[in-house]
Image (cartoon, rainbow, N blue to C red):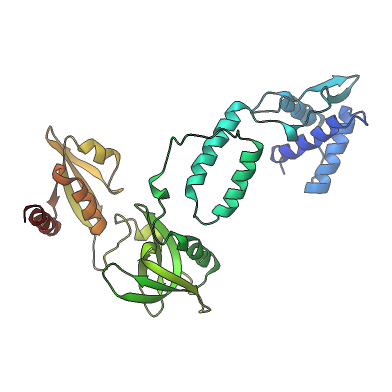
Length: 334
């Protein structure tokens, strides 16, 4: 093991030596003591050099974040702390450290309900108790995906089922549909626009199903033997689509979308799909090209742009959008 790999261990050993006023710690004694403990704890038999010990002392004396600002003095070839109460274990955080930790804690606390958050919560509480001030913080940042939607409570259970390779029985009710029950071999969880989806193999089928968590009404574990995932590769599954819906008979097409000049920068800086490219541009707007499988989510993204966009190819997709726009026209003019 390289010496830099156990630096923090050496610093703690030296810290204990410098705080121990009952012995006179010369360089030779420090070398012997640190070497013995490296051998005992890590099996490093070659020991440590005088140069390394002196370099460690130099680093410990240096200011944070590199070192600890340790008050190490050397008198008559003996090293010790000038302040007997000092310890790197008790070293308080500086203002920048506290500010960084405060910001990190604030961000992490927005993800309550995610798998393993209870463990994170315990760590955050320790950080707050030992490092952070008790002053109430005004919220200055938030995430869109922290809104707890219906079905969010099933997220930890499904996550654990995937990790444990456990088959689950899912009671499911799609919008405007009858209740269904699926015996699911769960493989993957994905969030899209604030909603979570579980992907897995349904017993008796050779297809990957996509179930929205907000339409799940109950989940029970089973003792059915779990089928390992040989069908679902997330990188492949999501590569050619927007969102989470992959049409069963869909194929990759070249799509051309014209966007008016005032909205084109928004689309350019927030691509609808990773294949997005600028095909042409002029004073009226920009035409973007895509290579993807058109699906519900892509159509929704186009409609979201309203009158600032026009889909120009392929014709089959133009027809779908024309029908959708006609329905909207009737709703607003009926």
